[in-house]
Image 1 (cartoon, rainbow, N blue to C red):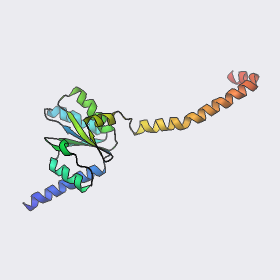
Image 2 (cartoon, rainbow, N blue to C red; image 1 turned 90 degrees about the vertical axis):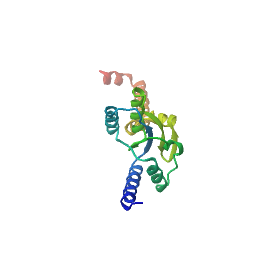
Image 3 (spheres, one colour; image 1 turned 180 degrees about the horizontal axis):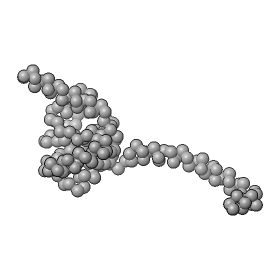
Image 4 (cartoon, rainbow, N blue to C red; image 1 turned 120 degrees about the vertical axis):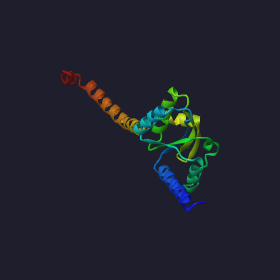
Length: 171
């Protein structure tokens, strides 16, 4: 094999390795039948979701998965595929599922999330998870709830013991 070709393949595998290391989720999609304009629209929606849409040869992706000691994707890597690397677990899959609703040619095949191989239904389930900001707000509301209930209970006790002070505070 030509030395230049071999070096180019090594460089591609290294690039995929870097993308895999920086990604929380990795999704495999079939994009056959999409127009150039539709692909540009998909790329723009994925960019706003902090995700990257890239086309690689399946053999290069297999080699990169082996190098990073991630599970083999098996039949997902058959046929023409594109790959979506997402910085957050649910943002890329969420954008893909939303786009696939209106564009029948985009087919979600499956992917990897936290080292687990998922089929298309698994990726769709991941897309329903809240993003990082949503999870943080849910967590903070859980932390805030007991304190708020405690304060309301103390206020109710004070109001019950001293009704005149409660009326003055309300006015």
